[in-house]
Length: 163
Image (cartoon, rainbow, N blue to C red; front, side, top):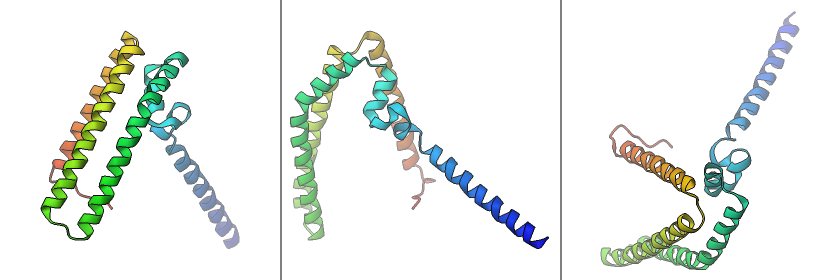
C-alpha cells in the first residue's frame, strides 16, 4: 500500500512539473516575442497593428534602406563615445572630460532623433493611408501614456529595485 502511495505521488509530481513547463512555455508567446507577427519585434507589431499591405511594407523597406547608412554611422559613433566614456570613468576622469564626452553623446543622440523623425515623416506622408495615420497616432498616445506611468512609478518612493 505504501508503494502505491509513493508511486502515485511521484507520478503526480511529474505530471505537475510537465504541466508547469508547458504553461511557462505558453507564457512567453505574448507581446513582441509572441506567435506570428510578434516574432519580428517592434516592426512586426506596427505591421500587425496598422494592417500594412505587402506594397506598403516594400515601400517602408525601401525608405529604410536609404536611411540605413546614416543611422548605422550614427550608432557606431554613439557606441564609440560610450566606450570612450567607460574608459574615462574607469580611469577616474575629471568632470570636464566627462562633460565633453557627454556633450558629444548628446549631439549624436540629437542627430539620431532627427533621422528618426525624418524617416517617420516619410512613412506617414508617402506610405500610410489616413486610417493608418489615425491608428498610428493612437499607438503613439498609448506609448506616451505608458512612458508617463513608468516615469511616475520610478519617481515614487515606493518603487524599489528588484534584483
